[in-house]
Image 1 (cartoon, rainbow, N blue to C red):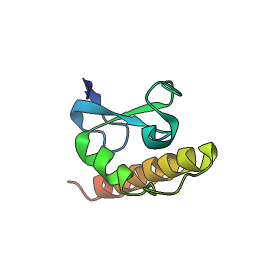
Image 2: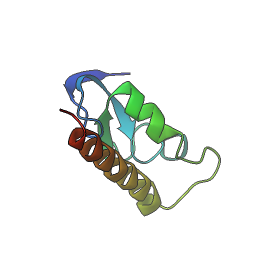
Image 3: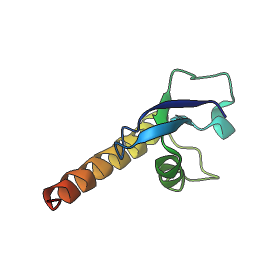
Image 4: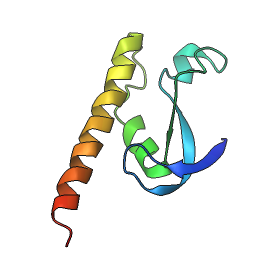
Length: 86
């Protein structure tokens, strides 16, 4: 899997990022919808993957909504944890 260096948009850690296909390859194949990629660190990628149903195909917007909700939750966690850092 191709990796890139940068800041994870979910947890804000800097490091190696992996490609998360917002529209699952198991339903859409490898060539379609390549523009729907989100670069995440390995930990966040794995956390997001478990939220996506394995055997049920959703509408495109539902996959995007799952990713958006995950990013929003991670952003909130980051904001709350940074409030308590001294």
